[in-house]
Image 1 (cartoon, rainbow, N blue to C red):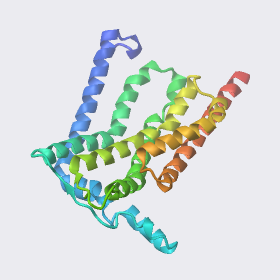
Image 2 (image 1 turned 180 degrees about the vertical axis):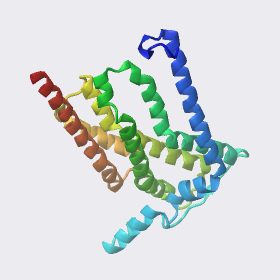
Image 3 (image 1 turned 30 degrees about the vertical axis):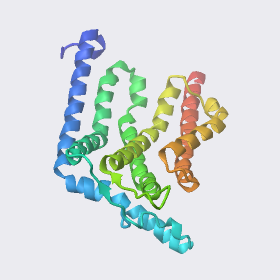
Length: 271
């Protein structure tokens, strides 16, 4: 098989290639997950549980800004709440789940690299040239999205959901798995949303998107972004605006990327 061009592989041989890419990806996730499992104090105390404490970076910045503008309500997560576990094996299973999630997030660049290596032989030389930086940029955008979700959306969500109550007679006792799932879903969703420019790039390259189309439906996209922000953030205007701004910026960047690609294609046709 080593003497045969990958473009000439049979269907079963392609499946074999894909199987090994998947196996290597799973191994990478497991290796990182094991490391995360070992360093549980850092994963839980320093990273996961930190956003609910007043000492967390974002909470301190909001509180400082609130003091400057004389808006005490901006001091979010000032009153730290307690997280409980109500299942016998709850903490152990949560430990495993969090380790796997950490493995997926931290191994994402390698996972995309494996996907790229599998896809690369099927591309023409010109397509390989255009997509050469796909691994780097997709990994960078995913990481930026995760950091954005963790440092901005998560503290706001934790503050709102953790302190909200329907009555003074009802106390909030936050379950561990509920807290973890909230943080995980927010950070992963943010990482995926930040891949929008990459998606626009490839859809434009294959002719499914144009700058004209993106501009025409800009108003519709704002409505979609507002709805998306309402889903992944607490239901207050301040949080939604903070989330909407970078999403709108990503959309405008997507228009610029699409416009640039189309201009290059037209220039080549004209030449």
